[in-house]
Length: 367
Image (cartoon, rainbow, N blue to C red):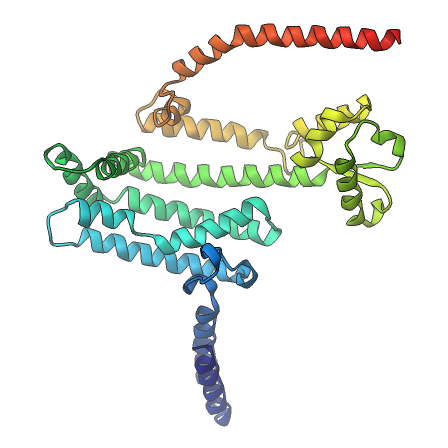
C-alpha cells in the first residue's frame, strides 16, 4: 500500500513539474498525495498486530494525534447518526448494544494519548491537550444532549421491566440511561446550553490546574553536594539521585532530589536532616501556591464556583452531592458519618504514636 502511494506521488510530481506554468495544480495534487501518505502512515488507522494489542509506541508521532482524533470523532458521529436513523423500533440490540459498541477508534486514540500525557508528558503533548480538550468536551456533550438519541434510550429503559433481559443487559441499560441523565439529557434547551458552557470551562480549568501542578513539580530540585547530608537515606534513593544529577550539567557529581513521589516521599521518611526535610516538605505542599504564573489559587476558586453551578443545574445541593450520588457513599452525610466513626480511634492511635516517638527520642538523648 505504501509503495503504491509513493509511486502515485512520484507520478503526480513528475506530471506537475512537466508543466511548470500550472503551479496551482502542482500544489493541489502534492497536497492530496501528502494527505494520503499521512493517513496511510498513521498507526491509529491500522490494526495493531503487536503482542496483546499493545500500542506500537515507537511508530506513534505527535503529529498523528490530531488527524486521528478528528477522524475518530467523525466516525463516532456517523455511528451515532446510524443509531438515531434506524427505522426499526428501538431495542437493546439496535440502541444500547450499538451505542456501547460505538466510538472504538476514539477509545483507541484516547487511551494512548491520555496515558502518555499522564505518564510521560512533554510540552508538545500538553499543547495538544489544550487543543483537544474543547473538541472532546463538545463531542461528549453533542452525544449526551442529543434529544433524538436520548428518546430511543428512554423507550428501551422504560420497557426494561417487561423484557427478559439478562443481568448484564439490564446493567448496561440502567448505567447507560443514568449516564445520559447525569450528562444533562433531561435538561431543557436553556439548561443544555448552560451545561455546555460549564463543561467546556471546567474541563479547561482542570487541564490547566494539572499542567500547572506538573510544571511546579518539575521546577523544584534539591541539589546536595555534601555527602553527610545524605545521612539516613536508602542506598537505592541515593543512587537514583546520583543518576538524576548526571542529566543536569550544573549538578554533575552531586545528588538531585525532586518533588516526584519516588524521590520526595522516601526523602521525607528517611532523611536525618531536619532542615532538608522541611525544605522538601514546604516545596511539596506549596506547589502552585507561590504567586507566580503557575499559581492555582484563582483556578481553584473558579472551579469551585463553576462546579457548584453545575451541581445546582443538575438538581443537587452541592458538587459533592452530585459526584457522590454515583458512588457507594451516595451522600456527603454518609461520608462524614464514616469519617466521624474513624476519627476518635484514629486520633487516639496518633497520640499514642506521638508519645512513642517522644519516648524514643528521650531514650536517644540519654545515650
